[in-house]
Length: 460
Ligand code: AMP
Ligand code: ZN
Image (cartoon, rainbow, N blue to C red):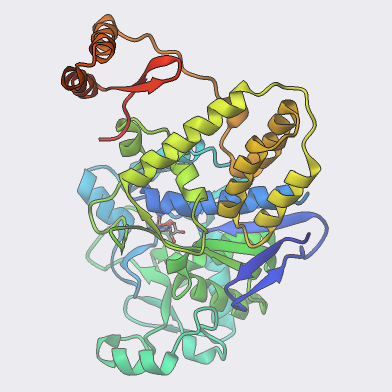
């Protein structure tokens, strides 16, 4: 049952074979730390974590590298406008360096809450300036660069295959953007090194063979992936927006510098949307994981929600679907908790689950196997052991979970008893009023065969 993955380069689902041995080199484009990550960004990291866990389920080890973009990502993808870090610094009144530090810490805390495994290597752009300069020098020595008044640019027209990953229509782009070209020779050309503006001292700038300035955004990933994984490695990931610009440019740089297309497989996670439009950091309003937690949701309920949609489909976020995910997760946790220890995983169910995972990470289909296990007639201890195997990929931390026994305040208990009395006396209207009073106070009452149960209300 081989692992098959959809590769954006070939636009096909191919059997995954590592380039050498059992260790898989995987590079994932990390966050630009000028703001908090929103739950859309986090969906991409959940997908990459699932991929890593799927590789581990198939007995590969993963050398997982994630970068931190703390310089060079400009407001516009056309390499114009301000550096997002300097813009963030103006917005918050903090230095770009302080911001990078704070948002990196916040980002790592979000990943931990979502039970995303720590990468083997974190690397930040500002700590790899000499490596980036060296790749630019290499590209320059091969004749693929030119100088404008604001930087050193990559001439994409010199590369035969430029934009293949995105199947870019270069002629169409050229015709559409002739007017806005400025000093750039082609619309798809991009900055390798930008000069600090003459009249302005930037917070982040360095000496280089071309003058004081800072690296373009794309060069960091070519330089750091080469340093940690070599110039041709197994898998490169990111969100779908990276296909047409960032990854196309990373490939162009590495192709010229090293003659490789950087990675054997290119995998992209599709966007989380709100009301059918993309969630983005720059468009102001966005939801952080903390907002979900403030509303009473467990971060792993968001993880569960993401697992339920294939990574190559858009996921529309709503609080209703998050509430449903929380309820299903709560039930699963309780069912798991009540199962006894000491059994062996059931080979057939593990195979069924692995078949879903290995079919281009169809974890959503894999979730359905959970209910089959729970409903089946295998021994209860085997059910538990089987779910432990599934959870290596799902990352729901089932074995660590315990029911939270929260003391119900006396006032709430008294209201619930009053409601129960009203029900017994068939005073339904009174019972409804009391249910609403409880809800207003943040408690939900559920009537079960064992009598009424009180639970903290989640959601808005
Ligand atoms: P950034 O911090 O903007 O560089 O983005 C970090 C990661 O999040 C990248 O891999 C993006 O492709 C990805 N991303 C950005 N917006 C979304 C979204 N709405 N849904 C899923 N992934 C996203
Ligand atoms: Zn990148």
